[in-house]
Image (cartoon, rainbow, N blue to C red):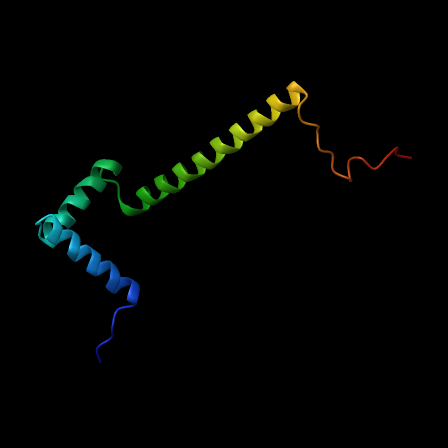
Length: 96
């Protein structure tokens, strides 16, 4: 029983084949180029370490954006151009 690949896989294979033809490379040459570039980027790490590094880089970028957003908010608060937002639970009036 022969199964057909999903449409996305077929489309990617078509693009890959066209890329090889455009640059006059064999599929093996292009794959070797891809793997050598990946090895240069990740220093020959195994798959788990490379995945972990990629996730840490993503988290680091997210945290950097968070810190920069907070810095902007602090600057705006110091300049008096932005009022501090108080949630209803902290501004419930005098406590008894």
